[in-house]
Structure formats: C-alpha cells, structure tokens
Length: 97
Image (tube, rainbow, N blue to C red; front, top):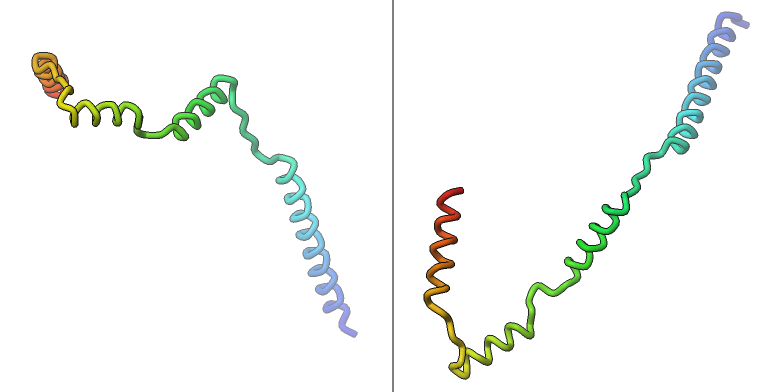
C-alpha cells in the first residue's frame, strides 16, 4: 500500500470538506443578509397617486362628447383673440428655451 497516495487522498478529502463547509456558510449568510426596501410615508403616497393616475382614463369622454355636440350643432365658439394670444405665448416660450 502506498502511504503517500493515502495521504494525498486524505488531503483532497479535507480540502473538499472545507470548501463544502464554506459554501454552506456563505449560503446561510446570504439568506440572513438579504436586501430589503422600504418606502417613506411620502413615497407610499406618491406611489398610490401614481397608480391612481395610471388607472385613470386618458380621455375625458364627457368633455369630448360635449365638444362633439357643440361642433355638430354649430354652437361651438372659439375666441380668436384668446387663441392668437396663446399661440404667440407658446411660440415665445419655445423660442426662449
């Protein structure tokens, strides 16, 4: 029987067991040190508001229906002076940016 071979096999076995024990310890530590996230009260309020906005319809159908009715009946009126002022304000604001 070769004693050196037995000693080498024992060393390999010990290395394997030590490595296995280290991996087990790492796994248990990683479960203990898991990251967590918590929101402040303001963050929770913001999240709730954002969810409500996302659930709200993009189009106010009652307003659209009202405008359609006015256009079809010919009673829809646009103040051209106010419209021109808003167009110029928008143009000037975009020009200054």
